[in-house]
Image (cartoon, rainbow, N blue to C red):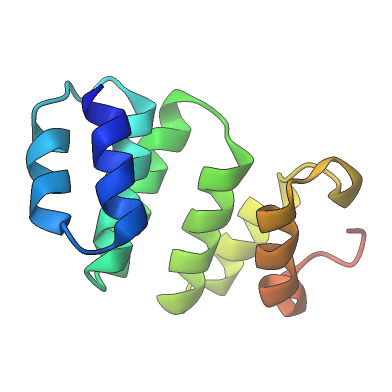
Length: 115
């Protein structure tokens, strides 16, 4: 329930403090919590915190959406070599979700030539 409410606040992009309060009440073992903390950090313009949160989420579960979000944060931080590593681990485009395809287009210059 808290995760869903926090996700709604983040989707609106307005009530960030309420989203933070909800996420603070969830234990650190939940990868979705870390994903949402990453999104919150992005909305606040803190790419370093976003990358750290996405890394924690990926340590718990492999998820292409989280991997793409981390790649975008890494790209903004100027860490291109790590972006390439993340992108190499993504599913082929035929299996990707539409928002993943859009993110891949943005990162295309960094993609390995085999994708």
